Structures are given as C-alpha cells and as structure tokens.
Amino acid sequence: MNKANNAEQFLQEYLMLKDSEKATFSKIVNKLLGESFLVKEKQEDRGDFFFVCENLALFVHYFSIIDYEVVYDKYNEVCYIKKQENKYREKLSKFDTVIILILRKLYYLKRKEAASGGRAVVQLEEIIEQVKSTKIFRDDKKVNSYRDSLLKLRKYKVIDFSATNITEELVIRILPTIQVIIQQDSLDDLTDRLTALKKEEGDEGEREDEEIDED
Image 1 (cartoon, rainbow, N blue to C red):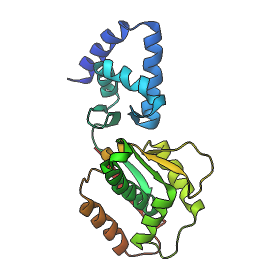
Image 2: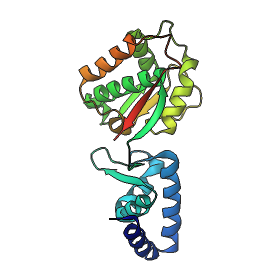
Image 3: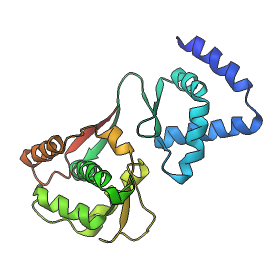
C-alpha cells in the first residue's frame, strides 16, 4: 500500500475517533517518537499499549506515511516503531554495550528462576560484578560511572528503576525490550560477544561505539 492509500485509510479511521480518542492518539504518537517503545509491563505505558493494540491499523497507516513501521510484539508484550528503510540503530559506548549485554544475560537467568515470578530484577551490585568479571576494562568502574549508562538505558526503556540515588543496592528491573534489542537467546553467544569486545584494540573503549540493532 502506497503513502496515498495509507493516508486515505488513516483519515477514514481517524475521523471515526471520539475527541478524547484523538487526544490519546496524538499523545501516544509523540510518546512513540520520543521513546520508541510502549511496554505493557510498565504501569505508565499499560493504557497506551492497549490503545495501540485496539487501534493498530490506525497507527500502522499513520506511521507508514512518515516512513516508520509499527511493530506489535505479542511475545514480549511491547509495541515499538522503527524506520522502514533500516533497523532502528542507536550509538552506544563500549561501556554501555557491555552493560546491555550483561543485562541480557541476567534477564535470561532471572527469568529462569521460579522465584522471580517471570520478572527480571537485579541489583546494581550484580551488574558491577559481572562487568568486573569480563576484564574488558583495565580499571574497575566506580558506582558513579554507571549513572549515565543506567539513565540512558532507562530512557530507552531497556531497564526501569525508581530510586534517585545510584548505589550498589539500587534495584533495577530489566524490561522485555532487552529481547528485542539483543536477540541472542544463547548464553554462549552473549559470552562470545563480550569476549570479542575484550579483544578489541585501543584504550578502555569509552570513545569506541557499537551500533545496537533493534529488529
């Protein structure tokens, strides 16, 4: 379907909405453009997530006009947008990349634990220990070194936490979006990616970026 047809379909469906639904639609469009993801598991996203699911064609037609694809991931219970001509790509520092790969490993392990209730919750201390164990960085990172990365990953809805102080006891919830961003299900594959980062030449890698793909 070309853009003209999508625009026509969108207009027909949009005009059928109530005024309150039009306001909700506009709010969600701006939210998706700013944050990419809607996560059913997040309380503040839940209502918007269901609105998109109930009006999926409306969002598909609208975003196709501006060259975005809307993805409803039923398995991970997330909705997100990505550019049609390419995968969504975000520049991350090597430190960010190491953290996100470790989060993916921890997500896998925590979801396997019966006591987790299907949610992946960790403390920052666990992440710090995992980073140390990779031996990718010459010097141990202080707790404060994690602040920017954690805030960035929370913004992108990879993780969630409510505390304002970043300490080793910080409780972090790893969101199912991690499975969209890092699709490897094998712990061996994740370990191999971390090993590859360790072998890279250069200094600590703070200035080295890696593109993370989001399908």
